[in-house]
Length: 140
Image 1 (spheres, rainbow, N blue to C red):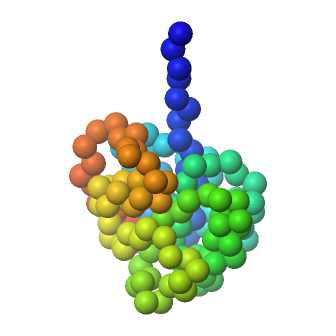
Image 2: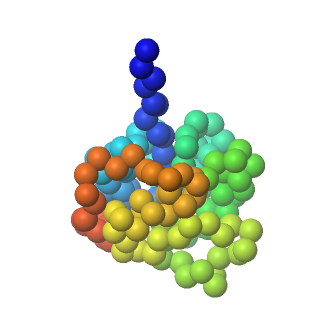
């Protein structure tokens, strides 16, 4: 009898489409996640946080000039761990929303470490050595 592990699921809140695409590629191709939803504005982020079943969220705090705190409130309410992938500095983030943080630009290794920390896992399902960086311009 074999036991198959389900592919971990992630959601992304990122308003820059190029960066969202690069982040999706990184999560899927390098870290073994299925990205089930991407949201680029606060309204979509709140909806996705409310309805999507996932194991982790990767969140840019600034979504088209609006802070993603209402979406984070929903993630917290549902018990979904999240990583802040943002240009915001830790002193600018309210204590209530502290979570593992990667500052743009960040590497795949930094994101993997932050996801592992957020999820409290010993391992993240890495498929290959991760050496690409993701910048705020969306270029790898």
